[in-house]
Amino acid sequence: KSKQMGKNTYFFYDDNQDTVIIEQQKMIKRLEQALSDNELVLHYQPKVNMRTGRIVGTEALIRWHHPERGLVPPGEFLPIIEDNEMIVALGEWVIAEALRQFDTWEQQGFRLPISVNISVRHLQTASFVERLEAQLRQAGRLKQDVLEIEITETAAINDLRHVTKLIESCRALGVHSALDDFGTGYSSLTYLKLLPVHTLKIDKSFILDMARDAEDHAIVSGVIGLAKAFDLTVIAEGVETTQHGVLLLGLGCELGQGYGIAPPMSADRFVEWARHWRPDPLWARVPFGERG
Ligand code: C2E
Ligand code: MG
Ligand code: MG
Ligand code: MG
Image: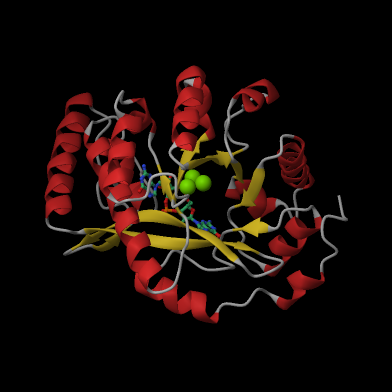
């Protein structure tokens, strides 16, 4: 039996344990090669204020520029190596590359915080904060609010004590933390009270259905209320349509990310996009936060 890893799966693997391990080893080798051949790239997706049009940040999303297969999305290689230490090398590359891109953009007149996704395995390494600090110091970016880390809600609640300390240490370095895919991880209010995160990212599955599914609408509304009560920033992922933005603004959520604003883009395209982008004119007319 083959395991399906997304609709255009390039890398099949067998449910048979040995085959899984062999395929994983092969993938690790290929990725190590890809890393040294500069085949990995970061694309960037803007985070915007849908009301004012301000671009508030950007999320770095890894892609593999494969010589034969073209642009391969992370869902087709990250899950295979997620529990291997290779994910750490990859994560450190992402951080270094994001810091490099921050410099380049700053020279072009942009100063935009970059969010990077950090995998559980990487977070769990004892030296995570130390290495992050070293990378920031080397880039001359300690305490400068240039990086944000996105941790999935599930990863955070599985290791609450450790992640709590880690988030505090990151904050001391000037690195804010966001809980990614929020709403999918069953975290209780108690957990949220304990986690010193800065931002909640509402998972796109709720946004995509909120227009026709009353329960998803209620969840989105609830998360926005929760963020207000805990004094956290809230951002919606999966803003694909004008209506998504209208509904979110009506509920008092002004930050959004999604194909309806812009897809993830190469760094150069991002700059072009940022020069021309204007928010949907309908969004400016929504009475902010007045609908429940
Ligand atoms: P994520 O962090 O939740 O990122 C959001 C994903 O949703 C991205 O997929 C993005 O392209 C996609 N997306 C953005 N707007 C929309 C929209 O309006 N509608 C829909 N349906 N999707 C949208 P992508 O780039 O394929 O990344 C998938 C996941 O892979 C990410 O989910 C993240 O968990 C992981 N990932 C990506 N880059 C990295 C990385 O550098 N390191 C690690 N550890 N994980 C990464
Ligand atoms: Mg993310
Ligand atoms: Mg997400
Ligand atoms: Mg996700």
